[in-house]
Amino acid sequence: MADLVVTFLAALGASLVFTPAVRTFSRRWGVTDRPDGGRKLHPGPVPVWGGVAVYYAMILGVLAAGLGSFGVGEELAELSAVVIAAAGLVCFFGCMDDHCRLPARVKLVLQTASVLPVVMVGYSVQSITLFGCWLDLGWLGVPLTVLWLVGCINAFNLLDGMDGLASMVGLFTAATMAAIATHQGNDYVAVIAVALVGALAGFLVYNRPPASIFLGDSGSMVIGLVVGVLGVRSTLKTSAALSITAPLVVMTFPMFDTFLAVVRRKLTGRRFDAADREHIHHRLLDRGLSPWLVLAIIGVLCLATGVAATVASIVRSDALAWTTAAVLIVLVIRLRLFGHYEMALVTKSLTRGLAGLSKRLGGRGAAHRLPGAADLAGQSAAEVWAGLVDCVKPWKARYLRVSLRQSEGVVEEYAWAEPNGDSSAEPWWSIAVRLDRGEERVCELRAAGLDASGPDSLEPAGLVRVLRAYGEHFADHPERVAELARTDRSRPGFGPEWKGGRAAA
Image 1: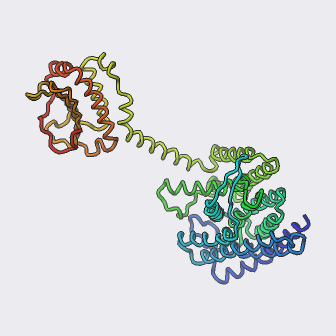
Image 2 (image 1 turned 90 degrees about the horizontal axis):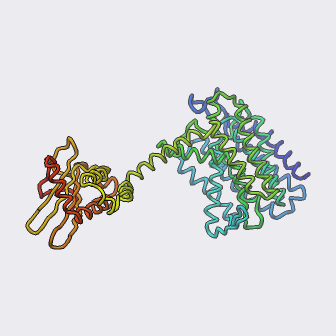
Image 3 (image 1 turned 30 degrees about the vertical axis):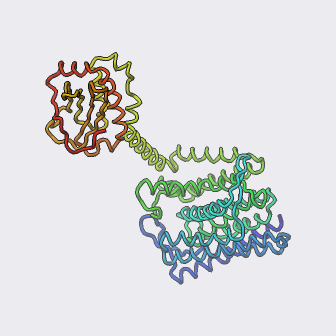
């Protein structure tokens, strides 16, 4: 424990010294974040590159740990080298982005390149445990580890939109990782976590509202990468098996914010890298809450998930951690603090999608609702015909005709046209079903329409099933066609030759 205290104090002191120095350097180089009246509402230019101070303060904290008993461990030396190398790359690329705004795709490629040192030394997850179940990932462990690390980097990058927010969340997250790692016996991981806690604590002195220096991408991405590595290493049961509950639950709200940002931009037709003022902190600020109150609310939420993950790790209850995370998410949405807008977008999109699917499968549904042969036999000819007309309307059929043919030609015929329709217009499409009852007679049932989106917009096979079901009835009961023809001679008819449209079935 004394070694962890030394690590924390060394990182804290270094951060308190480095931050104002970096602030001065950043201002001289003109690397500042200027207000734009939209997303950026701070009163004037604020220096960035705060991540440089956090990075070097964390390194000094880790080096100070070498003075204690942790310094003799090979595991700490190896993990420190990996974290320093990967975080150094991320910090460098972040400084570039802060200075000249790299394209989103280039930024993503550089982020991926930065995490490669982690997986190249064998820090990929080979298997995971969840609710007592063990899953071997095999070769998928490498891309999933890369995805996790890049996801953590971008989660904190997106969260860094308010004074002190990313620093505070990173501090709480790292502190949770330190507690879990200590309980699991992974003391070397706790050293890295405590070093990050100290570095962020010192930086928060200058980054608290109103901030005199920002983390910038150089800082938010460093926090995300280190937290991601800590998540992979802090709960390792063995060199290969990872209990994924703790890292995922600890990252509940950063990852939830990132997930909703992707959903929101996808459903509103914006680019994934398009900036907006709809993140969790923006939502709370727009409700009139003060920056300090927003920090308190988000801090309490992150602290709650962190405590839940820690307790669940101690008592070995994954259900406790996941239940807590789920309850908090539902509570945030129900209180309309965050996420309700995205849930409304998802609901609207699903409703629209189901309506479209229902429309496309309408023919199949109509077929399932068709009456059986016995049901049709119990109805009058007029009732059978009315049911047929109702069944073909979803396909935008404008015309319908049933005809009985014998060797000498058509012997009986009955047709229907949509009211107010032009019976002389040439149909765009037509589908026919012919039922052969030997040499004696052939029954043909044909539907046609003027709309080019007719059968294609639903399913042609569904319309064929409808026509076949009713065609079977008229073929077996030819007297019904004659009855229709006798009772309603006013129905418009069609000539025997229908040109164009779909070929007869």
